[in-house]
Length: 205
Picture (tube, rainbow, N blue to C red):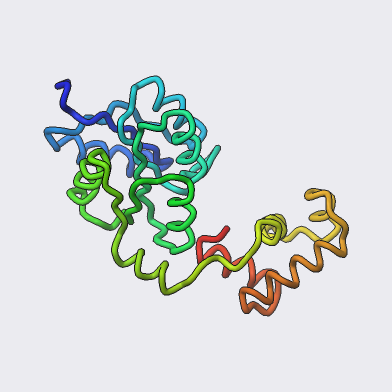
């Protein structure tokens, strides 16, 4: 491998997608895929072990999400650039990824050449964001839910009753009811299930 090749890690839980991306990126003369992982909690170790310059992360992975992994990469290996490449082009995901320190955010239906170009650009110090998603994030506005409201909605996502949520989060049932009521109101939903669905669709959860 040439010294001027960019050392890239791919983190994607679907092996066919990951291998296809690796094959396409390897066609680029200046990019070398030096590591591949299928779980978010394998990302940091692989970045450190292989001296990765650019980590390309999916969002939805077992162990840790790509957004959580991005934050850890930035803590443990600050010079490593992070590109989020996801099927889920949701404005809330974009905001959370940028807050976690991601250097680029692309949707997977973009051509492979765009991913390769994003790898080069972030290495040069640029920030690369899918323009349509950036516009949607601006139009969508900020996430109106507080951290605690999101915690309660996440706990309610599997159909847990208030008593179970209260035990899990060490809150009173009355407090859980209040947080759920606020979350339902802020999302314009009719009930908790609809509030959970809206929060997921926006990328807030």
